[in-house]
Length: 485
Image (cartoon, rainbow, N blue to C red; front, side, top):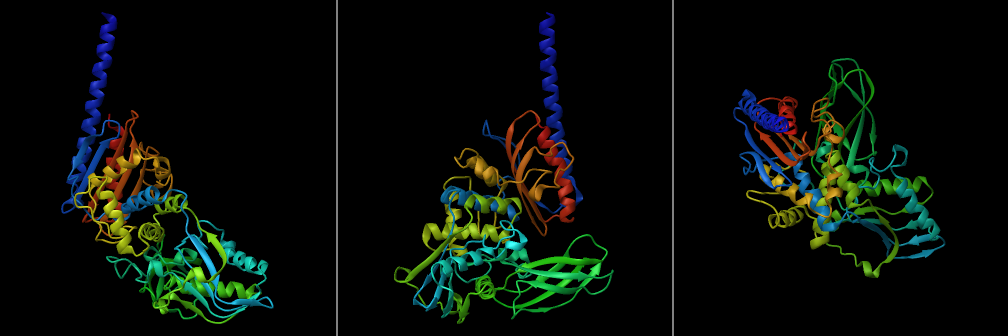
C-alpha cells in the first residue's frame, strides 16, 4: 500500500506539474497577445513535437506573412539539399593571345561564377584580403607571364546585371545589408567608410575609403551624437557611383567604420586586380571591361587558352555565415548558385522560382511566396506552419547536422547572442531570426526542460513598438516554450 501511495503521489505530481507548465505557457501567450503594442499586429505561430509529429500550439499558423531574414532558412536548406555541402564555385582565367618575351599579347578573360568568398573578411585576416590576387599573379609568373598588353574582361553574364532583387526598398540598397550578388565579387561587396567622429553635435569626417574608387562621389553630412551605436545610412542605387551619407554616429571616436554596398562589384574586382598586380610588378597595358558593358559579346571558352582556376568556399561554409550573421549578400549568392547549377541562369527571379517550386512539393506551402534569398524583399510571404514544416523536413534529412550547425544558439552566438541571455532558455534553442521595420520573426528548434525536441516559428508584423521592445516581449514566450512539459 505504501508503494502504491508513493507511485500515486508521483503520478499526481507529474500531472500537476504538466498542468502548471501548460497554464504558464497559455497565460504567457495570452499576455503576449494582449500587449497594447500588438493591438493591430498580425501574428503567425506554430509549435510542433518532432518525435510525435503533433501540433502542440498554434495561432494563425497558416497565415503567410512578411518574415524578413528567416527566409534564409529556405535558401540555406535548398542549397545544402540541391547542391550538397561541398559544392563550391570556380573562377577561371583565360586568354585569347600568345606569350612573347614573358608578356601576354592578348586579352585576359575572367569567368566569374559568383564566388562571394574572394577577399571576404569572414575567411581572411584584414592584412590578407587581396592575397588571392597576389596568388593568381604568382601563378601567371610561374607560367612565364610577367605582364600583358591587352584588355582585362570580366564575364559574369550568367548571373545578370539587374542589381538588387525586386521588392528591395530604395533606402536599403546603398547600405551594406543591401549589397547584391555578382558574377565576380570582392570584399563581401562592401564599401567601407572610415569616419573620425568629434564631440557631440559636430560634423563627422571621412578619413578613408576602402576600396579606393576614383569615380565615387560622396555627399551628405553625418553628425556626432551621444549614442552607442551606428545610426547612419548610405543612399544610392546599383551601378551608380553617387552616394549620399546621412545620420549620426557615436561621438568622440578616432575611427568609426560604416559599411555600404559596392556600386558595381564586378568593376571593383577588376580595378583591385589591376591595382594589386601593378604594385606587385605585373604590368597591365590595357583597359578593364565588364560584361555589363558588352552584353552582346559571347566568349567561347572552349576556344580560349585556360590559365588557372580558383575554387571558392563551399556551400557548407557560406551557409554557416549566411545564417550565423544573417548576411544578405551571402544568401543571395547561394540562391544564385542554385539557379545557375540547375538551369544555367543565376538571375534572382529564376532562382527564387526554382526554390519555391522545390519546397512546394515537399512541405506545407499554402501562401508560400519567395522572391529573394535573403528576406529583404517585403514580397516574401511565409507562414509559421510552413517554417515548421521545412524544419521538420530538414530534421530527417541526411544533411540534418550541416543545416542545424548553421543556426545561432540562443544567448550564445550569432544574431541570437543577446536573445534570452541569462534566462532559462539560454542555450536551449537554435534558430534564425528576422528583422525589418515592423517585422520580427524566429524559427528553429528547441529542447524543452524535459528533453522534448520541438520546432517552432513565431512571426509578428505591424506592431507599434520598437524592434528591441518586441524582442523583449517575445523572450517570455520562448522561456514558456522551454518550460512546457
